[in-house]
Length: 409
Image 1 (tube, one colour):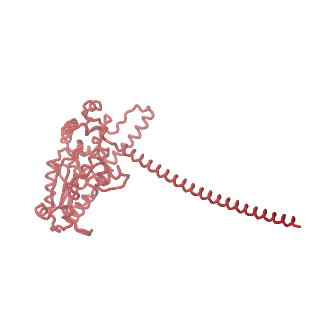
Image 2: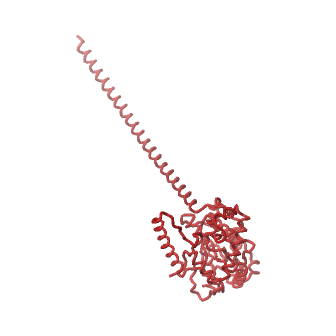
Image 3: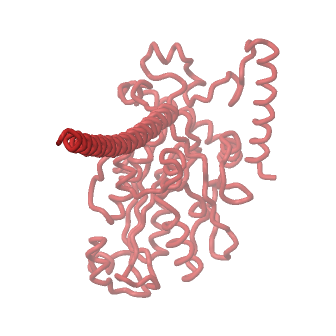
């Protein structure tokens, strides 16, 4: 059984026992749900809630402190394409890697990765591809091959990501990693990729399940839902990745925890392990990962570097949050519960409006029917009265004629 599942079952059992204890002891026992001390805060080892409030950092329930990973690298590749050709042999021609410092909520453009890639199956770009992506033939002719680009990425990764940091990729849907990297380059072209490319976060699916009632929507719509505007040129790989990173930060600030990792099967002979860097995937494949299991994996892989990074990064994060205290006010962070309650209230209001409109429509129909019946009854009554009047007049006239005939000599 996967350690993520074991830890999850253990937590469920512990939670059940805690609920039983609270019922027995009138709620006096403390619920140690995460670790000793009962706190899940990233800063809680050095500061408590009172100290955080006094120093105007922020309390130990800030949404960014609940995240599992320290850094997220957002990837949104561009590939060769042709209009109205679903069977076109796509090749990656742009690889961005936009870096997110999760604990500070920063999208670090300056230290992000970016390279163009020279295609070899169809080295000449189609007019449609150039118009869509803005990438010129001259740019890809001077670019490295896909193998050289991956080597450049590895060099950037090992230089930029601190040893000991829990890091994972992210993308807007499964297409970048599963389709373009794995199916088109690994399986079709037999290009070797490091194992870290075999697990990632799916921003679109997470947004759908956590913030949109399970309905996936496009990047522009997700940005609008989070009160953001697209910054840059659409279908530019780096600009797309930058905006996905901004969206991910907004989601985390809203209380969304990225704990569902998509895992690509590692049964091909072409991938290789990047020495000294762990994988956090579940043995069963894609699924929810446990915070404590991820930390244990990082500790086993990084050893002493894990604790060194934690200490130095914690100090840097605290300094940044003190300098930008307004960005980390809990009053400004809309939790998922509040968002859910507001959405539920809006749905109920819509239902009540529809119900009221339905009732009004029924009443109007009933009133129209009553008026119609009333008009018909009135017309029938008038007709009956008139008929009766005519009959009476006729009878009177007949009696009058009879009387006149009797009186005559």
